[in-house]
Structure formats: C-alpha cells, structure tokens
Length: 126
Image (cartoon, rainbow, N blue to C red):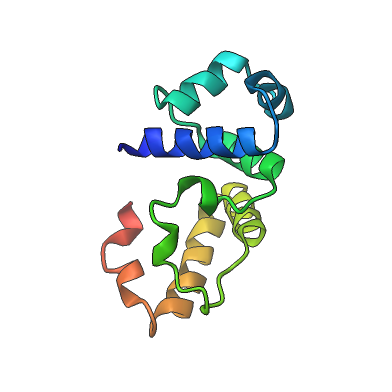
C-alpha cells in the first residue's frame, strides 16, 4: 500500500472511530468534504498544516497519522511529544535566514556526538 493510501486509511479509521462523517471532519479542519474523500482514498496527500489540524481534531500525535510502522518504536524509549515538535517547527519557520543559520549551529553542536550524520559537511547548501 502506498504512503498516501496508508495515511488515508488512518484518517478514515480515526474519523469513523469518533463517529464523524466526512462533512463533520471537513468542517472541523476548515476544508471541503471532497478533500477529505481525496485524502481517505489516497488520491491526495494532506499537507503539513492539514495533518496538524487532523491530529488536533483526533487528539493524537502527528506521528500516528504518518508513521509507517508504529510497532517499530521502542515503547520504553522516551519520545518527544508531538506538540513540542510542532512548536519547534513553527518557531523555526518564523526565523530569518541568519537566525536559521544560528539554530542550525546549535543543533549541530547538540548532535555532534550522538548523531553527527545529521549535519554532514556540505549540508549548509541545502
């Protein structure tokens, strides 16, 4: 099953488990019922803002809508909350190019020992 179809299946399952119609969900996220149909059938993939809105309506972590295999996660490992990640992304999206460069340096320093591959040489051009 393709990524769009898997996301669509999750959306439909969550919607139905909450007793919502496609119209109810569309109203809740400010979109049309035909958009919900396209998401659920895998003809269109929701953008990040739509996924955020869906996660809020369903009161689930964003990852539960898009992750390919929930069983691969280690339940004993402490994971960041999706709300924390959303806050970081929103903040980063509002930074100037200079502030983005500074933030990248901070992240590079944080991950230098544990995940150096996240910021390999040449990544500054991306």
